[in-house]
Each structure stands twice: as structure tokens, then as C-alpha cells.
Length: 150
Ligand code: ATP
Ligand code: MG
Image 1 (cartoon, rainbow, N blue to C red):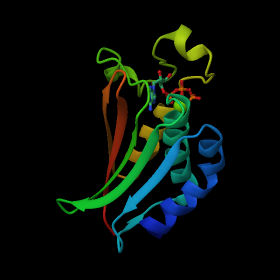
Image 2: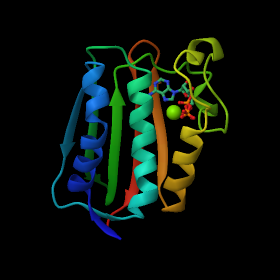
Image 3: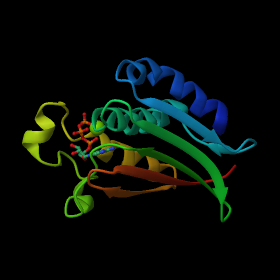
């Protein structure tokens, strides 16, 4: 299905906004208009809901999470950037693996199975896209999706 990216991201944002508000985390959307992509919206919802669930879980109060969508090199780039606890460099290669969680004791308090990112990667790749991550401990994390424009 051909989907207008800004409207789609806006609707995702509205679904998670109450949880972000409750934790006093600002959620911002910065989106280039007239961008479209071809996705299965039901499955792709899982991508954003998982990435935003992580941003929320692994951020502190009074921080900001920013979603950006723009066109670069003929591809669609969508990034989700938080100002949370970050991911240690040595863990970064494994976070998309099933059941992998950074620092079991730290993340036990937040709950979860370590499945979210494995599912995210599977869905993104099933759409012919790619996902990458940049992170700094104590600064934050940025996931970027690169997808075909439609
Ligand atoms: P689940 O998603 O199954 O509820 P989870 O959130 O622990 O559990 P993933 O979403 O797969 O699992 O993430 C794997 C691990 O990567 C997390 O346990 C966490 O340590 C780390 N991680 C993921 N996203 C972030 C983020 N935005 N900031 C900091 N750490 C993160
Ligand atoms: Mg998760």
C-alpha cells in the first residue's frame, strides 16, 4: 500500500503520545512533505511502535525524542533519535539479535524480552529496507531506516 509518510508518522505519534507525556518526554516530528513509501501498514506499525517503546523505556524524564523523515540520495530516511541512556559500543553489533539485552540487571527493571529490535529488522528488510544505529552512552541513540520511495 502506498502511504503518505508524514500522515502515517503523525498517526503513529498520536498513539504513543500519552505514554510520552506521562514520562514528560517531548516527542517531535519533523517531516518533509510529499514523501510516500510502499508498506504493509499493519506490520510496519510494529517497527515504529517498537522503536518508540525503546526510546521511551531507555530515556529519562524531561528529554526529547525526535522523529525525522526526509529524502536523501533518492531514498527515504526516517530516524528516531532519543536522548536516553545510550548503548555501549561493544553491545551495538548484537542488539538486533533475538533475546539480546544490554546489561541484564539494568534492563530487568524496564521489562522486555529482547525481541523488539529483531522483529523491527525483519520487517524493515522484508520491505527491502535497511536499519542502522548510532549511539553514545549517556547521550542517546539514533536508529535510521532507509527505504525506497514510491
Ligand atoms: P522487548 O522489545 O522485547 O520488549 P527490549 O526492549 O529489551 O525488549 P529490544 O527492543 O530488542 O529488546 O532491544 C534490545 C536491547 O537494546 C535492549 O534491551 C536495550 O538494552 C538496548 N536498546 C534498544 N533500544 C535502545 C535505546 N533507544 N536506548 C538505549 N538502549 C536501547
Ligand atoms: Mg524493545
